[in-house]
Length: 111
Image 1 (spheres, rainbow, N blue to C red):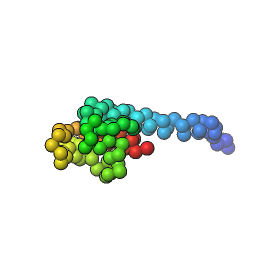
Image 2: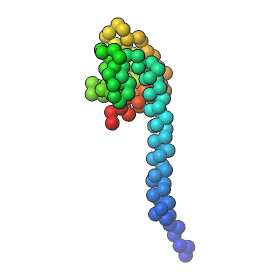
Image 3: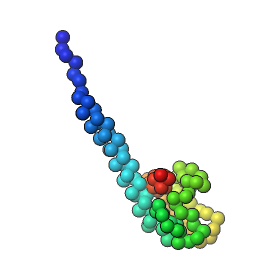
Image 4: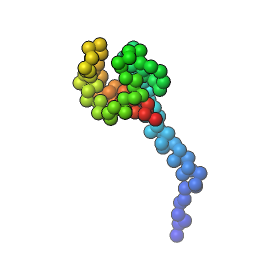
């Protein structure tokens, strides 16, 4: 009879650390892409970071958007062309990957 192969506890711990890290890396890249989109397209009016006031008083800081509505619901609006009730905001249209990245960034600000 052959002995059963066992995996050392240290190897299991290492796997537990490495597997989520790979997923976190993809998430981190998506968040970083979203942050770049926000800074490039939105920062002239909105506070896009964790602190600071919006340059345009009427423009809500991105870190507060999740208190107004689920940011996940913005995906379709970002892809089709986001419009608001105030005339000073230009229309933005992002491809689906960009919309997902921007939403990932907005979600990262909830923490």
